[in-house]
Length: 77
Image (cartoon, rainbow, N blue to C red):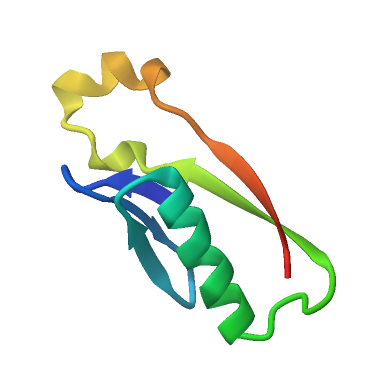
């Protein structure tokens, strides 16, 4: 999934859904709900890779890209 921030909320976008949350914990809950709704990995742990969307950075800010992050989150569905 692509991970970004719109100034107020964290936003994660994948091929089949996009979710957002005020905190990373809120975002994780929304991702888990979307996975459950799609019957993805029912009864098994599912790991979701979220890569920060560096393309959203203006060119002049890309020098600060190392201050941002990628994350892997495992959900027990």
